[in-house]
Amino acid sequence: MNIRIQSVKFDADSKLLEFVEKKVGKIEKFHDNIIDAEVTLSLLPDQLNKEVKVKIHLPGEELIVKRNSKTFEDAVVDCVDVIKEKIVRIKEKARG
Image 1: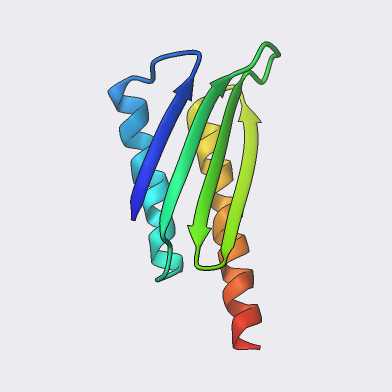
Image 2 (image 1 turned 180 degrees about the vertical axis):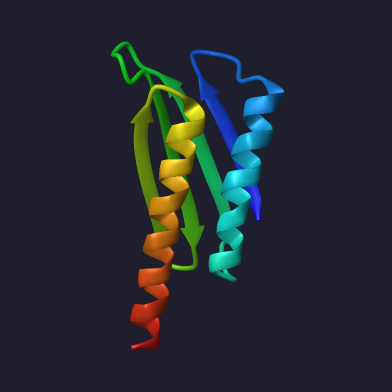
């Protein structure tokens, strides 16, 4: 799975990029047909100023989850958890 990471208004360090790739890469286990993933890391002016948006492309479907937190790591973990749940629901619905 191809993972594209974009950081808005700052330069993400390699440690953060590796963390994002590792966590988002785990989503691949839950669905065989994931085309790619886009991760956008943004800084916001409020207290929960780290925003992470994860977009997963499946055939005929796009999953988008956005979370804010005090750290990018927490927001990434939250996004990945929600996407895993959505993928499981999609697969269950497909089985009927």
